[in-house]
Length: 182
Image 1 (cartoon, rainbow, N blue to C red):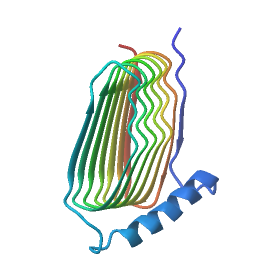
Image 2: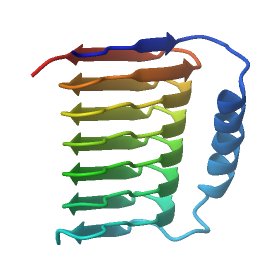
Image 3: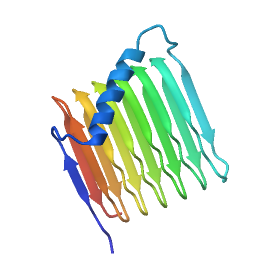
């Protein structure tokens, strides 16, 4: 049996998570000034079949970060603050997770989770930013919050127990959600 649940909040709801995102957006914009290092390119590969994990915090502008995990424990916890930043998290196999906070302007976030427990709390605040989240197989979940202007969310959940809640606050925003079976 497949259980699908989709809850969309595309407006101005006063709840704690949106308040958190507004505060994080303000902090991120303050921290994105050129006084911090920028133009970093980081790649983290944890390809062993072990207890994966990766906690990264990145400040500045024009940063690229790729986190690849395969195998068992997974997890990721990534924070990225600044502008014109790119973040890609790929998790395959077993317990997955992700929890990403990205604030600033002109941000791009991609998350791909395939197999077993999935999950992926995502918070993004800023202007001209995008979230592309793909979950395939097993328990899924997602909870995405995006605040700011000219932002875009695309969520694809294929196979198993889907569950999505997302909040999109601001003006000139777009979203696309797909849930289905494999």
